[in-house]
Amino acid sequence: MKTLNRMFIATALVATSVHAFAEVTWDAVKKKIADGKSYSVEYKYDGPKGKQKIDYRTVVPDHIRSELKESDDQAKVGAVVVYDASWKQVRVKTGGGIIPRNLDHADVKDSALIKPVFTLILDQVGAGNKPTVTAEGEKTRFEFKTGSGRYTIWARANGDISKTERIDSSAKGKEVRDFGPVQWNNNPSTGF
Image 1 (tube, helix red, strand yellow):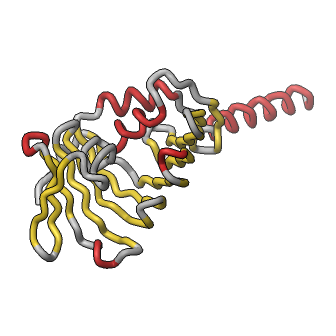
Image 2: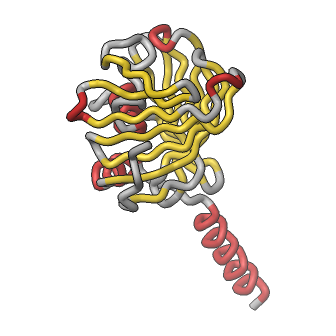
Image 3: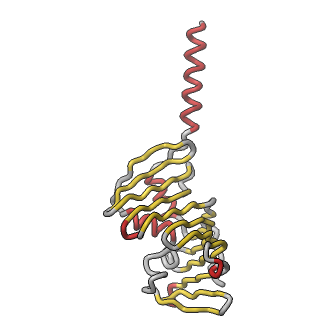
């Protein structure tokens, strides 16, 4: 009877510990992004463009609003960048007014200012790239080898990306994004 009780307790512990690892698949993460028609998220960026905290909103794929909440360059705090595909440019609102920027401007090209941030991440990883997967408590880590570096993505059990780390010669150094909770399909305001 003692052996049976010990086996029952051991089975219960194993079953409990399995649920503690909230592993999610890469396909589930990609599907969540593909199914998102709009979203808003606050995230911290640390990379070649400095340290920033951004309030980010998009109606996929043609409307994006980024507001700089914090920055190591205090002059940029409060700047709002709005992209509307029909304008064929972005508009930056600062204390000095509204400044237009072409889509091929160095600060705009290939950025989350004109492409939804999660779509940009998937593009940077590469469509057919298969990750190495590691469960880390309530998150799952996906590691990718890219052409000239590596890309690591952490996702929550619900499929939301919580953090990315890109080390790539094209990124000109290490680039990290820490994402807060994502509000999906909330049709956020993307204007000034």
